[in-house]
Length: 96
Image 1 (cartoon, helix red, strand yellow):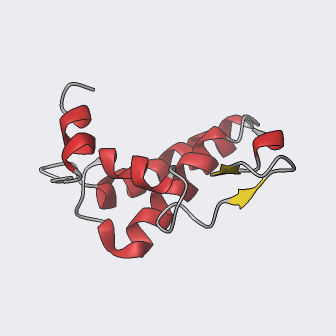
Image 2: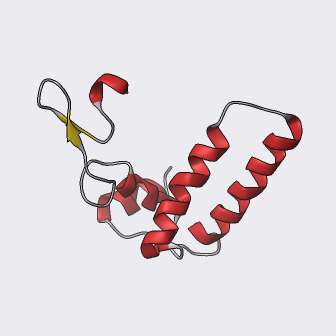
């Protein structure tokens, strides 16, 4: 986290030797390993999906810290919608 926090604060995400494109391939391997072990947590699929969205948006050369931008409410993270109280959340607040 000591490397990622300054990147998030600065809004710059240099990928270095292990960019998101590599993380995406690793996530594919984790999903496959879960399938072989018949694991059902779904977590590797969630991570792979998030990384895939970020890479597909053109950030495959960025660091893992870029994922933060796609978990925040707003244009990069999707279109937040208001919950029943009018609050805007990255996911519906009443489902989080």
